[in-house]
Each structure stands twice: as C-alpha cells, then as structure tokens.
Image (cartoon, rainbow, N blue to C red):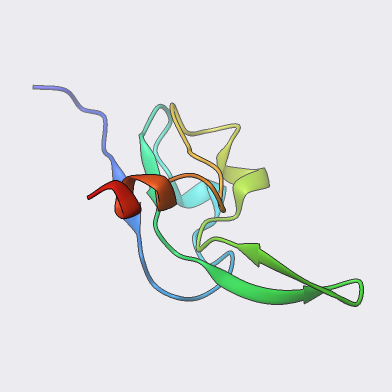
Length: 74
C-alpha cells in the first residue's frame, strides 16, 4: 500500500489549504471555486493556495479549468 495521501478540497474558502498542510507527492484535487476581487476585477480561485501547493503536490489541476470540465461531462 502506498504511503502517499491524496486530498480533495471542497470547503468554499479561498486559499484555505496551504502547501505545508500537504504531504509531498500527494494528488490534490481542488473542487472549490471562489470569486474574489483582485486589483479591481473579479477572478476565480480555488480552496487550495496554488502557489504553495504546486511545489509539494505530485499533481494539482488549476482553478478554474481543473475539475469543471469533468463535472460538466458527468
């Protein structure tokens, strides 16, 4: 059995899950979509802090565009 742990984040809080919470090599699926104001314009970000998580995670789809197309296809 693999010691790698995987993570699915669907909390509804922007950038709640930090990179130091993730085990190295884990597959992280960020389901959260949060609309936030960034420099005067609306943008969509996930529940995972992408910048901190991408250096630790083995796989991390971007938000938006990560799991959205999979959800629509289902």
